[in-house]
Length: 173
Image 1: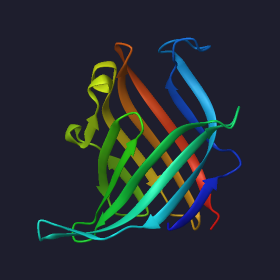
Image 2: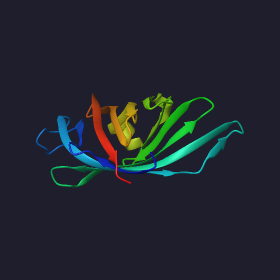
Image 3: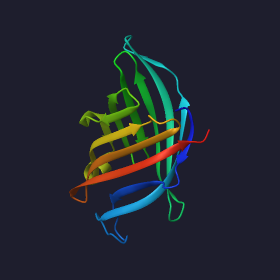
C-alpha cells in the first residue's frame, strides 16, 4: 500500500446531508461525484503496555469535487496492524474536530467497525452533527487497486442521516 494512489476515471460518490442555501436544502440528500488522492507512508512501530506490538502506515486522503475541483474533505490517519491478534485499526481525524478509531480482522478485504468509545468529537459536533457510528469495507485484493465503501451514521439537523462514500483508486507511484 505504500505509495501514491488516485481515483480511477469514474471517481467516487459522496452522499452527505445538504446545507442551508444549497439546492437540496438543509438536511436534504446531497450527492457529489468526486476524485481523490491518497498517500501511504511507513510510520514508526509502537509497543503498547509492554505486550502489544504494532506496525503502522500513515495516510492522507484529499477529496475534490468533480464539478469545480475544490477540496471538500481532508483526512489524516493511520492503518495500524496488530499481527499477534490479526487486527487492523483505522485511526483518523478530519478537520471538523472529529476523530475515529475502527477495527477489523486482517485480510485483503477488511470490514472495519467502530464502537462508540472509538469516536471523539468537539462539543459543537456532539450537539449539532454527532457521529454515532462508522463502518468501512476496504478491499485491496487486486494488485495496485484499492476500493472502499464507508458509512458514517450522523445525527444532524435533529434527525439521523447515513453519510456514505465509495471509491476505487489505482496506485500511481
